[in-house]
Amino acid sequence: MRLAVLERLGSLLSIGMVGLLSLAAWLLSELVSQSASPASSRPAGSVSTVITRAEILQTNAQGQAQYQVRAPRVDLFNDGQALLDQPELVSLAPSQAGLAMSARADSAVISGNQQDIEIRGNARMTRPAQGKEPALEVTSPWIRFDLKAQTAQTTAPVRVVRGASVLTGDGLLLDQRSETLRVLSNTKMILKPES
Image 1 (cartoon, rainbow, N blue to C red):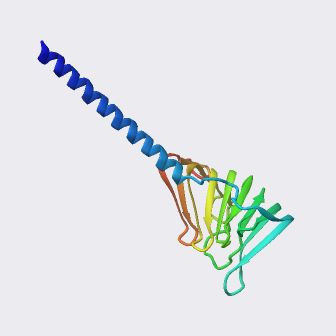
Image 2: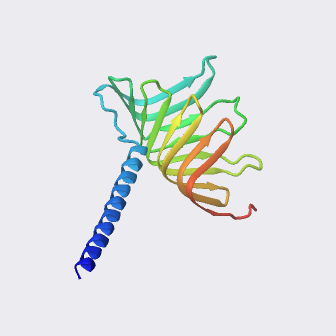
Image 3: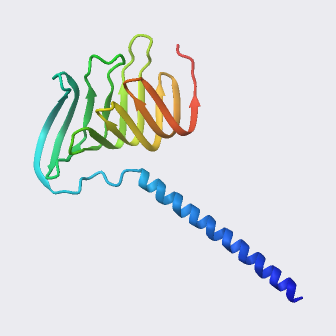
């Protein structure tokens, strides 16, 4: 009888340990997923300048226009970062083989080195239709652009509409140089023939 009680106690202890390990694994996965998403859409420094109706033109080393950023309000921070209200980012580089992309959102943060732009709130990237290439629209809660590498990425849910086809999933990596777009996980696609 005593042996049966010890066996039951051992079984309960084993089940409790498995439960604790499962809880620890879940907590770890939550911490990792939170660290993968952007921490804040507002720079930490203090505002040094406010600009209304801003148009920013970024050029490459040869002086050729690459990107234009327009916003009705820009807050410049003392650490070099900028917070934009209702920004529009337009790719202008004519040397790229692909079609020009544009992006809009509720707000954006430009890094101090002006190479990274993160758009947040109803983030949307579009490319117009041209020739046999259908229009493209990507929507997500936030998207981060690396202007030097000419990439856009997010770990948030995304929806990609290309012509009549729709692709949804979690995470996105778009490389403008190689003209590739990948949805990273949980992908679902609805394919419709082009008319």
